[in-house]
Image 1: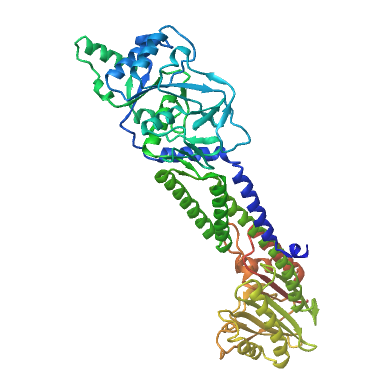
Image 2 (image 1 turned 180 degrees about the vertical axis):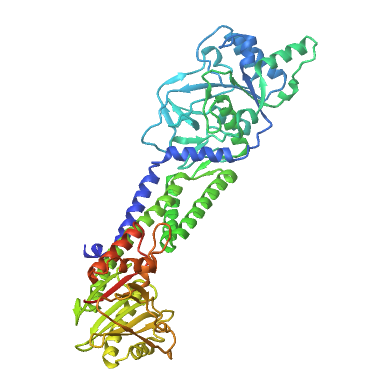
Length: 640
């Protein structure tokens, strides 16, 4: 039990999927949809070659219009048999049930006797059992036999039962029906076996084959179900002749007129005779057409046997095996490739499988599942993407937890809040664009009269920038105590950072405020401008500070400083470009001018109020737009 508990979740999911596939495939859950795919492949196939020995003789609308209503008097059938015998027909196969006695039976039976080549049909009451086996169907009731007056002289008989699939189409027939102690062949098969000279008594039933006389092997499924290989649509397949036109042509020739139909084409032919008139019960849907005469089914079975062109259902076992292989290949694709590549590869796999299954069907008559394998490919992709999504969501939760810890640690690097210092009020704010920031600031008391303020912006965002930020603050705190001048601090920082972060740099401003001398000393390493509000001049200006190179680019970079007088009521505002470059829905930037306006709007406002106003204005400006960069603001005011 301990071993099973240690197996990964993925193993159980794959195992359960395989069990579901085996169940759905072996028990043909999607059989109705597979029938649709079967019909599609049959339609994609070019029409099959039709034996020249086949002629279908139709009792169509023209025959009924000229000879009377159905059923036709049997003396007409007798006349047809006589004509076909005289024209040299090899066999006459009636797809018409003669189960009851009728006038002219004696004339008809004498014609059958004289021809010696007539086949008649019968029909049994059969039901396809739920528990299927590999033996013929057994029937205890005959629906339509052969009238007693006609039984003596026919050369052979066969049943005309069919299987009707759930969608109402006729795709299969039972090759054999056992009635009492006799085994009845399907009519078309019976005629074909006699044509080939096979011993109909020597029949072997195997799991997926019926072998007749050790010479003819027919592919079957359960209950000797045989797939009818319709060669094409009704109008484009067999040679069609009209029942009435044959009789008329013979009569015209007998009376010395030139017949419109050449009856010599009937010589040595197997003639299938049946009803094809519109609206009759013998028209049923098939894979190729919604209205197809069952007369064509008998001819199709005969043609299939003669040409050895069969459709072979590979059966549930091999379909199950193929479906499992398709699942495993699809699973490997989905687990190995990224989602887009996995989607493309899955589409290619599905299309390739379609081509293979269609090619095998068209070329060799092999029918294998198509719908379910394509469903497997689609569901495998969808399931694997869902698994990846859940896995990524789980990892994201873990990562967010770790980032929360990282944010807490990063916040510990920021200085303790210093709100007042020797007549100065200070307010600071930092808002990461992601969980952790690449912006940094520090406020240090150098001595009793001097305050050091440092602000920086690491190129990039996220975790890498935050790590550089942490190291930069740590180094600054060391150097700000070792060196008094701003340029020296930046120069030392630059040397330490050079070469450590490939492709990254830090922009920064470092300034010291001397409350005793009322002076500001400031140096810039390529940072955004420092804004200075002069109470005396009532102006907000960008301080004229020499801009040096950002930290970490060139080891020997030099930095200069500038001095600004600081009077009561003056303000200093430092910020990162996340503030000035904040964007709205029109991709407009917040800009430095808006920051200047906020500073100058209320000259009596405290540092904290100005900071809050900046936050409100930038939030209103970029309403519902994602924050694309970290924002840091420091506002310092000299108290009046």
